[in-house]
Image (cartoon, rainbow, N blue to C red; front, side, top):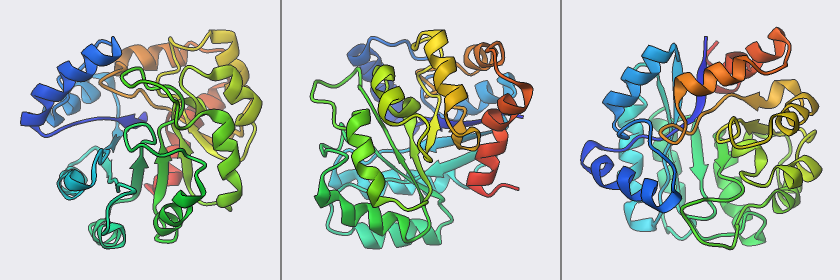
Length: 264
């Protein structure tokens, strides 16, 4: 059983424009066309049981439409869709309540696309509004290859946020710092927080990645590909070849996600 905790899909019309643009900006190949249909086809072929779809409201105007799409996808078999709120929106509380009523389990924030620093004290009310409703809160962390500096969620800054969270369900994507593994190892690995493996296999030197995976709390690591920027089959095969115990691999591939998502 495999649960991919970090994937992206778009409405069909938007996917045809968005995926080529993002691929050009980042220099990364896209392994799907970004549509729900093709993503579901490829995940089933790869033996992925469930994916967590990460939606991002990149501006306040589009927030409602982004969440409409998340709510629709959340009804589909094999998809757990996360919604998103934009820090500058004036109806965050309403939107969070709407998502909660629709059965959405998580909220994705992307500090680079949404232009906030993750440890900005002004963000605390937004975090609290999300977490007090029982949502999982997922952050993009580290570099974003499609966007210029500065990095809005570097590992050292993430460490500054930990005092804001007291055991809530917070996930730091990309091993808590894409492209910043050494800093993540120093400041975030071994902390009692969730991390996902998206954009790590093939991007982080294997011995360093193994050190991070073996050092972090084993119940707080989630397998993820960042599809379409990662390939289901390639990443699963690479993960299974890592020098980890079978018990730890099983936790990372699905057991930890099942518990966090309350699927069992």
